[in-house]
Length: 240
Image (cartoon, rainbow, N blue to C red; front, side, top):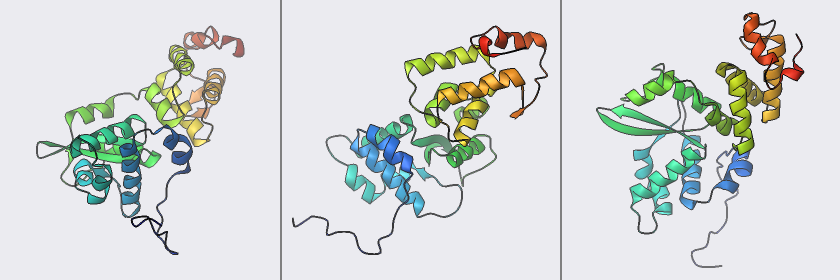
């Protein structure tokens, strides 16, 4: 055994919970070792904490000797390496990023991209949840009132946005209200049926039977409003 090799895990070693989907769906797509180490370190940090909400800050990670000792390689500065790793994690949908204000200076806050994390982000942006000494910036408050981007929602909750899926989403935007698409997407996630085919079937069903706050029932819109579904792409599936 080499002098500096790992001696092995002790019999009662503590463990860090990692979502299975990270191992099967995210890790194979991660090519940057600093990104991978940063994500795993965040999982480890949050697993050791209690209370709500659970988050980490950029400054906290930058000052973490264990993390930075593992990714501080090459000619780039420590801050550049960490920024790049976190940006990739946000881009790939593993982490959520908030820019909050602390006495006129920006504080970068990161949360795990889970249903809880998304709810926490929304609550912070709307001012319903506050972090000590931090408040949403003007840009983050604007995000709170902006309608969600269905393409981003699809990538974050369903899967990779291929050209074919993007075209399907564009067609769906012409046929259905934006809140219908978002609701159908969230229902697919809740039912663990993460595919566009399942989402499309939900929308087609609502077009036929009506949608009332997520429940089935006759639509109360005017007949003229229903015509766009009957004459649209899925019209052959819709009966008056």
